[in-house]
Structures are given as C-alpha cells and as structure tokens.
Amino acid sequence: MKDFLTLAKERFSVRAFANRPVPAEVIRRILSAGQAAPTACNFQPQHVFVLQSEDALAKMRKCTKCHFDAPLGMLVCYDSRQSWKRKYDGQDSGWVDASIVATHMMMEAWDQGVGSTWVMYFIPEAVKTEFELPDHLVPVALLVMGYPAEDAPVNPLHYQSKPLEETVTYL
Image (cartoon, rainbow, N blue to C red; front, side):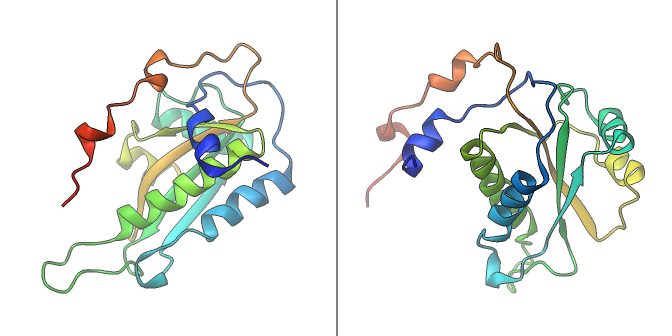
C-alpha cells in the first residue's frame, strides 16, 4: 500500500481509457471514499449519479466535449437544501463539500487502478436537463473514469509545481 503523498503525486488526469468496465465492487469503494469525505457540519449534502449505462453516458456526452469516451462517469452534485450556509453572509458550503467528495473519489479510484479526470467544462443547464435534476441539485463536477489505456499520455504540466515558497506563507 502506498502512502498518501506518493499516491497524490502519481495520480494524473487520464484522457484515454481502455475498453474495460469498472466492476461494481470497485465503484462501491470509490463511492465509499466519497462518503467518508468531510463536509461542513457533516451535513453531507452531496449526491452522486453513477453514469454507466449507454443512455447515461450518451447524455453525459451531450453535456461536455471532455468525456474522452470514458466507460464510466460520476456526476457530483450537492443539494442546496441540505448544505450548510454561513450565517453572516449566506456563503454556501455545497461547492466545497462536493469538491472534497469528488477529490476523495478520484484518489480512491487511482488507488484501485482506475483513472479519472475532473471535468468542470460542462454546460450546467444541459446537465440539469439531460439528467432531469431538480433545482435544488447543483452539479459541480463530472468525473470521467475508467482503466487507463496502455498509452494514456500524461500531460507534461502534471509534473510542474510552483515552489512552496510561492504558494505558502508562514505567519
């Protein structure tokens, strides 16, 4: 088993997938990792749609060009009726909560040998229409997933990080 930092550094956005389904047990582990994610006040406002049928995947493809013909998708939303709101300015934690859930799922997917790419380049209205989402469900991310193709390229920018001195300030 790899330590978390190694896992985090090795994971990359996969944009080429093998023609191989992801087994139900692996999907369940990925979903369980999302369930374990921290959310504001533990309200757990997330709702995840597992897109695996041909119909669901066709709908996903209508909503984004960044589907990379993945054999699996996860539509991560939050329920605005359940998300915590900051009292003094009404800031909604739903976007952050759903993002943490999605990140946990992506890391567990990688640990299971499943690649993924976080897609925010989608048309929210199309997602709401195609998947018949009620107004209180807010789509945050499409995670396209599957086993990486043998020749799945790693984006060269993946290996570039700013020095910590540029992004961290000790006070």
